[in-house]
Length: 334
Ligand code: AHM
Ligand code: MG
Image (cartoon, rainbow, N blue to C red):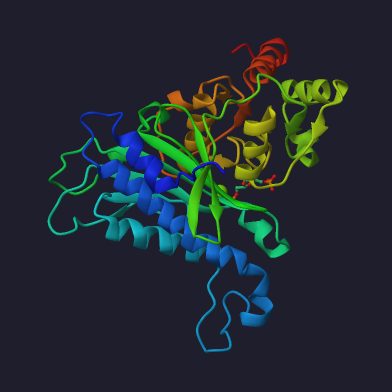
């Protein structure tokens, strides 16, 4: 039997690769791992909601039953608040960023952005959802309160990013900018164990992932590219949970697209806590991520916490091919 390497052990081992590391990032990643286990426990109970009570109603014990995405948000914030290694968070569930006071007077140099439960409309039907997170080093004075500019950093400035997929098994995938590694939760010992080392995305794959129901709402160049995928007999897979769809691409190769539509003229997905962390992971694994206007996602300067962008992400050769279609068919020159 191979020796098991737990997430905590791996993170601590990796810290030694950075001679000047102070252990703060290590602690922060570990705390996110703990939050993921707590969220996982509740996600796994989601099917019991009819027994325990529906969200927004009282359960058998008279407690209010919370929506799972709000629960996940609360648990993540709670873990980061107690961590002492995070001075502020920005979440999909909160309008503005939330400053976190120093623990025992020690100022912290990191901010965390996250989508606590992405694809949450899937929960009611027992389909995979995920948590996405990104960690930045703050740029404002470490002794003062956290500032907006600490969150408005390009994805290229990410110190670490990752996601947790609550699927048939629960998997945590993260990168600190030196490759991508995946850890599967072993429920019998309650630990994330190293299961996928140095993940590399295939240069091409047999899958494309897009909400084809919006086909007629897409610009002509996107429609031509989607036709091309269909001509190639690629398999269409769309779960409606970005984490799950991108996860498939990461392991099996392919392309995930969320272009602009009439309803979402700038795309639907959020730059800070959905597209940037996943683009960081995919690029670290050898893939590419760009907008449908061909701007590299990680190079975009954020102007709003909840900014939306279009995205094409996945296998490098396929994203490059999409780029060629955009250049060939776009009505207005880029
Ligand atoms: P959410 O954060 O509110 O769950 O929305 C994001 C999700 C993504 O996970 C998914 O790719 C997309 O919305 C699906 O949108 P659509 O139903 O328009 O295809
Ligand atoms: Mg989301």
